[in-house]
Amino acid sequence: MANIASDQINQFRSLLDQSQEVAIFVPKNPTLDDMAASVSLYLALSSRGKGVQVICLTPTTVEFSHLIGVDKVKNSLNGATSGRNLVISFPYQEGSIEKVSYNIENDTFNLVIEPREGYPTVTSDLIQYAYSGGNVDFIITIGTAKLADLDNIYNNYQAIFSEKPLINIDSNAQNQRFGRINIVETNVSSISELIASLLSSLGFNLDADLATNLLYGITSGSQNFSSNTTSAYTFEVAALCLRSGAKKPTVSSPQTFPFPKTAKPFSPKPQVISPQPMSSSAYQPRPIVNKPQQIKPSPASIPSNQPVKQNTQPEAPPDWLKPKIYKGSTLL
Image (cartoon, rainbow, N blue to C red; front, side, top):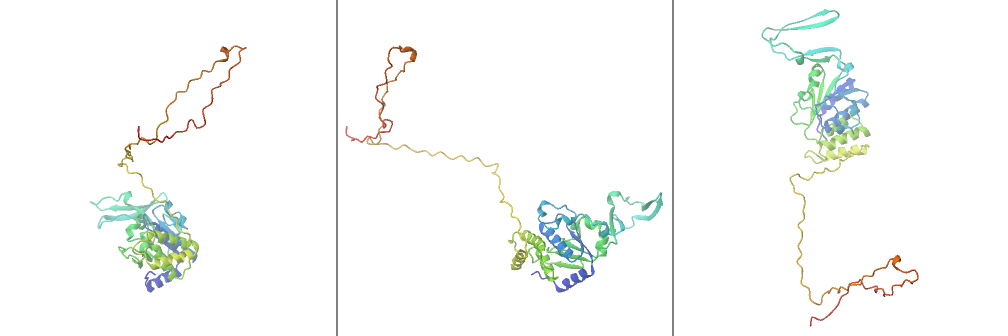
């Protein structure tokens, strides 16, 4: 079992008991293990009546189609969860802003940002928008070594990341431990195995859907149970998933490799067989006998009063065409 500290388990349980809305963030270009762990956590927390959102900037692919709940993954937080406070952000250099003001003209609110003389103007491509003050109670990152791995998700929701408790779950030794609670274990075969251990410590029971997701993640993350971090507990968790009704991951067909373009087509070398001399007692060919050609007269050439002669030539014996073997002496 993953060595998760008891105080981390207790802090997670406390947050879960006090919260109703949870946001799970997945890094850009996630692995199958990352996505399996995320949707597994989504199913588990949803079973406790929590409002859960899974956010990933990268669209889900066919690789993830066997995961239950993958259709719930979105590329942004919905309006109710992300809050009502608009946050406008852009890169700032110390002393570059002279004044910030606003005015209202024709029912339009105008925010005026005046740059200081000698500094560049803030262009539209540098401006980013986000919302804060929403009802997200805490957030979870899965397989994220650093917040920059979330790309624009982090940029768009920096206020939420700074305001809300963050639980950082990862198995990467390079993780920067940026969360309030850092559940980072490097001795597990996969993040899905880590999630299985966490859910077990929190008292969750596995159903068939949750077990199927975890088994997919463990199989992929452990490289089909062949990685160096695969342990006895990895197989124990896989067995538990199967006993809970998990469907086995589909095995892809064996990979075929095309014939190398530089290779020459196969051309077998003909085998030369030298003739062997034959003795005079060996097989002797049968002498050729010229059979007289029979000309069949046409009916017009035969007088009507003359009887047609039947062919009286005896027929060839049945064994006439069979090869003959003659035995003889070598003496002349």
